[in-house]
Length: 117
Image (tube, rainbow, N blue to C red; front, top):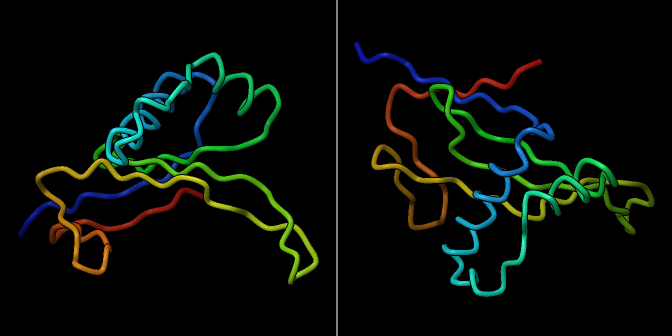
């Protein structure tokens, strides 16, 4: 039987500023927009942690960050109350994972999803 690998979600901390920058640059490279990217760890610290304008959650596989989601609070007009907007989502696909034609990520057999409490 294959060993199960867990996917754990964790919120980023100030100490992750350089890691957040690296994921943003990976996303920009994927979207062929690296030439427009001006993000720095200092900007991440200022706007995400000092001014609290956005947050990041990492997807961890085997204790290593494999993807990130940048999100922030917004106002949902049709609901008349605050909501959450996912601004960026990037999965660093390894040779173990693939994409379906419909754009969904397919993880290899043996992976499970686990979200911390």
